[in-house]
Length: 444
RNA sequence: GUCCCCAUCGUCUAGGGGCCCAGGACAUCACCCUUUCACGGUGAAGACACGGGUUCGAAUCCCGUUGGGGACGCCA
Image (cartoon, rainbow, N blue to C red):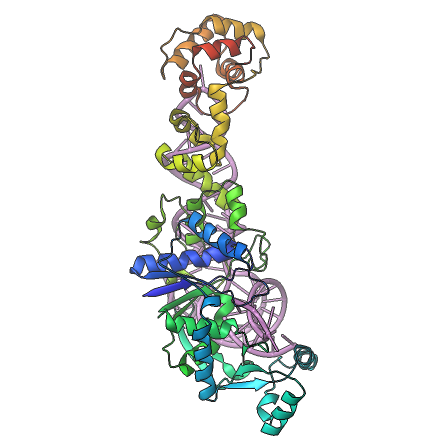
């Protein structure tokens, strides 16, 4: 069993991409299969090396490791052989229309209310016609001759599918300049790599029918197909159209945990509860493509943020350590993490509480007399989790204050904030020396 | 424009003619816990897009309307 994730290095990975990558990874992981990362870089105009590196980095950051790697630009011989085989079988034919001519034809068809399908004019060309065109300096692009029949398959997500191929254009497989297009490369590679399952977005469903024909023409057995519903954004628009607006890079910069992203993307679209998980493997047992429907799930950044916070609230220091270090927060005290984690939304928020503990903090003191009295009553060290209530009780008895009146001024003096982790846990970390200074209004 | 697909609480969904005046999860709200907030616990509120059929009975089947998504490239 082998799956592939085949992005084209024409941009950074975005949510829609990693949603597909993740499900491929999970499917292979659960079945004990292999995961191929294949860079579809046949479009030399738009593919760049930087994007190729970026894609790998994004995948690594998410923990989506691949067993195999290749890129289409290195596999030209495979495509040459495939094209020749199709030519020999009479399934590949030369066409001489220019891109402008084709555009015009489509426009005319559309204006007549007809579907913009290639009219196969090139099929009617005689040898003499072709010779004449060649003599004029025209170079052909090559199309695959589709059989005009109904192609059916059982989609792992969508159930029984069929496409009437007489309503499809013969796909161009080779450009005028002799380079190949995705449609051919993809199939040739899938055959060569023995890909058993193609898991991709629903924008490829009609492609599937055409590709099945190419698989068959090439003598390969078509793999199983699974077309996941396309994610839409909050306004209900397709996510894949908005490259860059939700890139992996951007999510990382926002401080989101890779596991939060994975957990969210793994469950969205299914009825399974969206819950934080520690590692990708935890997602394996419940993974099942048949849990998906055909309608588009909404990708909600707020829900992701919420999940991210929830994940952090339970994250032991040992598991946060690496991530903290990666963010330049290697100096975070484990004790601070344990006390503050329930109050953070993003991992870097802990830095604030570290600075509250270690100082310097400029206290907010509204009632100096009260703070001074509290300072006077501050117990001697050693301090522990009981210190806070012993102290506040003493202050209560001495001043007659209670409830919010009592502790809010203390919190503000001690932390310069009016919310935060439990003071009974925070206080011992701050220590007597700093607490004393802050109660006196000094920055410490 | 043509073809394909979809339509249940705010969101993700369960549901395949009576087990459903619709179940779960997330979010929301309330209460509890906590000498605030957050965390945690308990509970509440909240939906079958609309109109016609079929049927003793429809969220479920059929038709239509509306709304949404996708495909139709010498992109992938």
